[in-house]
Structures are given as C-alpha cells and as structure tokens.
Amino acid sequence: MMDVASTMVKFNLKGVVEDRDRHGNIRLYFRAPGRKKIRLREKPGSAEFHEEVRCARDGVPMLRLRMWSGL
Image (cartoon, rainbow, N blue to C red; front, side, top):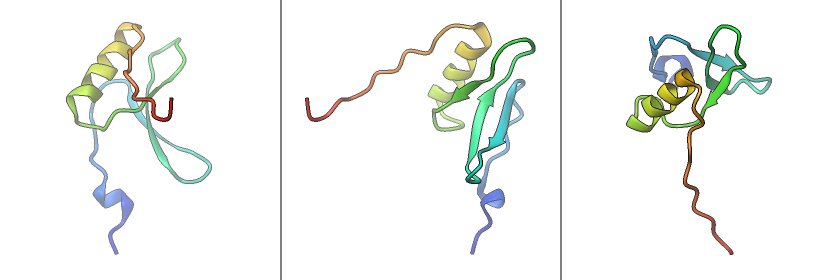
C-alpha cells in the first residue's frame, strides 16, 4: 500500500503551506505576513493553481465559475 506522503508532490512556492485538518486531510494555503491564510482549492501544479496563488499573492479575489445542476 502506498503512503500518502510518498504520493504528494512537494511545492516550493513562496507562501504556499500545507496544513493538516483534524481529520488528517492535507490542505494547501497561501500565507503572507500580516494577512489571513487563503485556502487554495485548485489542483496543485495546474495552470489554475498557479493563477490562484498569483491572485492570493496580489490580494485579488479569484473568480470561479461553478456549474450548478438541478436549477
């Protein structure tokens, strides 16, 4: 059986940190000095992830398009 840590890709992006919640799930956040941490929800390594990090670094909200079903 593979260990979760061995399958995770390590990122060396300034301000991006891993945080483990009370259930053991790993979440990625952007932390800048003097500001609240911002949850990064996009797939790590994708173009959307890098765009989300850039928006968090610049202090600009990331606009997400969501598909709503059942309307």
